[in-house]
Amino acid sequence: MDVQVLRSAREIGLMREAGLLVWEAHQRAASLLKPGVTTGQIDAVIEAFFEEKGAEPLFKGVPGHVPFPAVTCTSVNEEVVHGIPGDRVLREGDILSLDTGCRLAGWCGDAAATYPIGQIDREVQRLLDVTKGVLDLAIEQMGKCSLWSEVAAQMEKFVKDAGFSVVEAFVGHGIGRKMHEEPQVPNFASPQLRRSGDFRLVPGLVVAVEPMVNMGTKRVRTAADHWTQVTADGQPSAHFEHTIALTESGPLVLTAAP
Image 1 (cartoon, rainbow, N blue to C red):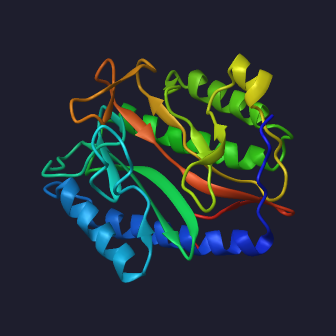
Image 2: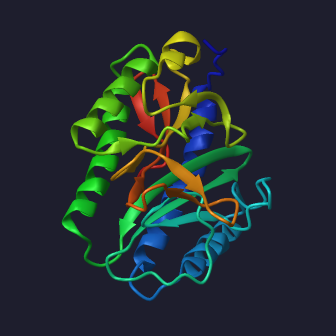
């Protein structure tokens, strides 16, 4: 097991302030989501909001083949994660996975959600419901289980029982002063997790849990922009994420409504 960095109640309180900004950024974006809006317009609104609040966006400039150019990831339909905002126009029946984060006073918050654009297909809505449901399940079980592998096994079963697949190429993460810290937080229970990557669920732990669920195959591929991840079979994908602290009284979702 990795050495765990545990946060004090004061530090968790500071992370809650960052988390609330991320929550509010999502509310601002959600109020704009309708057919005809571009992903670039959504990104600009969130960038301006973080600037207004004196918060540092976490995503812009992240190193890669090309530095990530935006403050949000906007992934549409078969795009799983890391979609780059731009001039793409959202259309009736699309789904948009919106992921963003910020650092405020030295502490980070990170959250994602998948939003319907107008009326969407019933099975696609079920995909969104299952993905949000498996995140809700994880939060609940974090207050009951002793090890992350116990939670991850339940998450994997929940998704597979619904007839969908868990993306294994990307996982959640510890979070604190940096966006990505130890431990890695998978949404499935692999032998490697049980053998060497497991961690204890104890007060002071802060993690970003982010299930990504595909309607078809779990496999993904990288698009030509070097960032966007798309499903290998072109079927839809959903993504929900919260930053969660374990406290003496149970899980506290730092990126949820006040």
